Image (cartoon, rainbow, N blue to C red; front, side, top):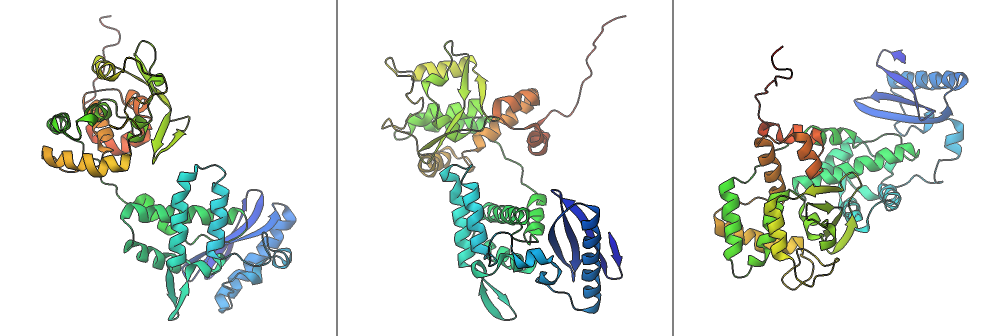
Length: 387
């Protein structure tokens, strides 16, 4: 680290290449030198660091960082002869992610790109379209303006999702040498540290009222078993919709959860989320009562009344909302069936490790979101009896 009267520049190794980090006028900067971590390269890096500090002290600091880049980098940029715009950077990031993501998952990226194309920010009383500006020149002030604009356009969850994707994009850009700093980092930290409202599970009386309303409703009684299964197992709605009879083992002692179905698209869930759920007598009776005599292994366990896939969005907007209203139960999302299962299991004294295994919810999340439902008075067993 090189000291100076107005701050310091850190020389560090990142993925076996040297880079510099520092602050000027409250803004963070990072410059990848593209040099291997050797003694000679570190000497050059120290000279660059000293030059930056002197320029900052004298008021000659180059905010574009061009002045401080090694000659090889200024003569030949890493990826292109021209700096990428914000839209071009995000487009490249989206194409990179498309190699590993399901096509439906890319919708979030496409929507974020659309917002980049819609937003104008003000700088020196001049309106500029964010998408058309060079990604390397975007500062935290621009990110904050975009975030403030998003608040008027998106729900809180969607806004956070946009910021997470933009942060990931600029992080990816720094590893590729396309940009030097990440203006979204501080906003991302705020998103991660923001308090999260704990889940509000249904009470036993509310669960009974919901199931009773489904069983007696002339239009929606077809879904009564489906909703009861959600409450009894804690599976995700998309996982229950995807279930086939072939997923139940021969003696009906367990059911395999390894696929999900959303918006008509079936896909395998991640390997660390796939699991076998043990079935108790109540769940077995529920499934046996639904099992057609001449069913095929690939038939759905919970089809729609027409025999096709349940559309989770339509079911939520029509049946779920209506039934909760009729049952006199405060509205909560359909996913609250899963929250309710987890909370009731923990309150009943079920080992959190077992709950995590059944629900594919990691122990850290259980501790963070459901600690209040875990009995707080520990007991020490008598391991050895009388000596």
